[in-house]
Length: 240
Length: 343
Image (cartoon, rainbow over all chains, first blue to last red; front, top):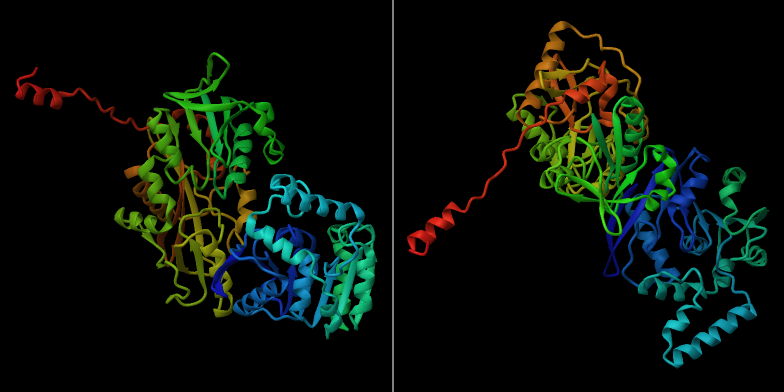
C-alpha cells in the first residue's frame, strides 16, 4: 500500500492506494462503494486482467484515506482528478461499484464499468418514508437520539463529517450525468441486489447511449464471486 | 526449564510473531512452555498450549481467554479475591518489529524484574533503526553498504537501481527496488506510509548474502552455521513470512575458511558490546571480497532455530546479563539532616 498527501480546495487529503502490475501499459482504476474500501475490490480483481496496471484507491473518508470536509460526488470526482494526475494515471478504464460508480461516471473514462452503481433515484418504500417522518418529528421534539435509530445502516457509526457527506450523496439523481456520458460503458448488475435494485440498472442502461448491460447472479456485492467472468467481459469490451 | 513465550504486539509483524510462536511450540516441545499473547491494544492474554493455532487469533477468540497483568517478578491472572501467578523461569521475547524490538518490551520486563531472552534496551535502539545500525557497525569496526538518508525528500543522489527501506521496520515491509525514475514516486509513497525516514542504498545485483546467528552462552559465544539464504531479487513480505515458519535444518554455505573466519569475526564484533541475552541473526553481504553488515535481527523469525543443531539446549544455556540493583539508603538526606543538627 502507499499513501500520498496533497492539497485540494484548502484541505489536505491523504489518499491510500495500491498499484498492482506496476509495469503494465494500460491503466485500470478501481473505485469502491460507500462504506467499503480498496481491499474488498482488490480481493475480487487482483488475480485477473494482468495486462492492466490496477490502481486501487480508498476514496476520501474510507479505508486509509482521510477527509476533513463535507463532500458531494462532484467534489469527490475533482479530488480524484487531482490525485490521478499526481500519480500519472490515465483515465482509460475506471471500474466503480455503487457510490464509486457515480464518481467514475463524472471522471469520464474511455471505458466506464459500473458495478451495481448508485445514482438512479427510485421512489422510497413506505417503510423508509415512515422512518423519515418519525425521525423529523423526533428531531422537532428535541429527541435527536431517537432519530439516530432511524438512520440508514450505511449512515450509522459515521463521524459527523462523513454523515453530512452521506446526506449529500445519498439522494443525488445522476440521470442527466448518465445521459450525458459520451463514451462506452459496461453495466454489470447483481440480480438480487436490494441496495440498488435491478430496475435501477435497467434505467441506467436506457440513459447511457453506448452501453452493454449484463446481469449476474448475486446481490449488491455480486462481483466478489463473479470477478472472473466480469474480468473477461471487461477485457473483451476494452479490446472492441 | 520453564519458558514463557511472549508474542504478538502492536507491530506490522504481529501476525509473523504468531507464526513464529506456533513454530517454536513444536521446536521446543521438550521444554515446559507457557504462552503469553500481547494483542494490538496492549493487553496480555494467557493462551493455553492447546489453543495455539492461527484461528484463535484471527477469529478474535483469544479475547475470551484469561487476561494477564504485569507485576514485580512476573505475570498474574486476577481472580475474584485472589491472584494466580504464572510460573516460569524466563520469558522469551518473540515479538518481532515494534514493541518487541524497539525497547518497549525490554523496558517493561526490566522494570518488573522479569528475566528474559531478547535484546536489552540499548541493543534494541541500535538494531531497530537501520540508520543507527550503520553508525553502530562502523563504531564496532564492521563495514556496511553505502547509503543516503531521506527525511521527506523525494529524490536521491544514489544512481539507479537502488533500494528504498523505511528505517524502522523489518520483514521487508515497505521496501522496494527502484530501477528507474518512473518507479520512484510510487516506491516513495509506499515507504513513507510506514516511516518518515527512509534509507536509500545502491542495489547490488547478485550480491552474495550470508546469515549468521548466535548468542552468548554460559560457556562463551555460540555461533550457528553460515547460511546462504535462497532468494530471488530480495525476499518480499510474503516470502519472508513463509521464512518465519521454518524449522527444518539448513545446509551450511559453501565458503572458504578465510571468509568463514571473517564472517564469524564480524558477528563477534557486532554481538559482544550490547547484545548479550539475545539470540540475534546478522545478515551480511560480501562485495568484492569485503564483508558488509546488511542488518541485525535481534529477534529473528522463529529465533533462527533452523541454523542451530541443538536449539533446545542453546535456549537452556543462554547467559543473561546481570543488571546491578541500585540501592537507595538515604545517606545523602541523612547527612543533610545531621548537618542541620536534626539527626
